[in-house]
Image (cartoon, rainbow, N blue to C red; front, side):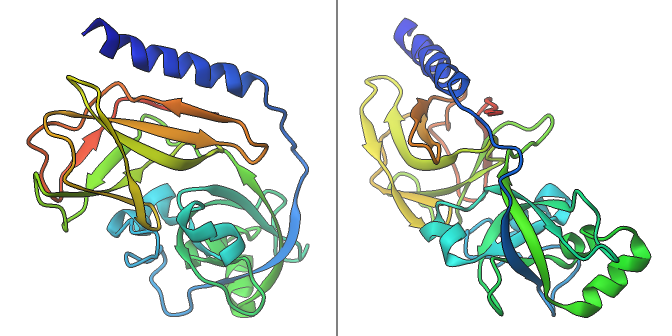
Length: 255
């Protein structure tokens, strides 16, 4: 039991050490274009390629976006956050809007297809938001930023396709910070036998014949510069996990 308590602390400590070595770039905006879902509700879609379901339509207050292939990155980009600002001074604010990637798609040489809420959120005010939406496609600047979910821990939702104990599929909610989750291990908590999971699609991770008993996750957080660190959440997935349930992992990763 002492080892199981020590592992999360060591992993978190190593992770924070790695983070302290990072340097940030506050002005590294990239030029591109953005459109919005023309036939959608104000919020995002609940059938996005990342596999978030209804969570993907409303996370971040509905400020979400589909991403082009180079940002979607075969699902690695799911859950990443970007500051997106349009550059027409007549309509656009300086800060723009912060969006979460929940889907894959591009249109007319865009990197982002925003929810209507997010697209209008780039505007100076409600009047200019209507004018901005009328344009349909605009020139933008964007950069990767840290995701921030106040009072929310990283959480997993068990996919409806799961069947205990034969098959487990889940998606990770509230991915925080500015790093990607590039690998996930599922570990049996008593013997700490671990199984490397497959990325099924988007942000959905799967395991055939998952380990028995309560399950501990290990998530590999990777930065663009190449630094990597495994993080072990404080809470486990219970032995009697069920399809459709969500489980709070009791950890926040803010860098």
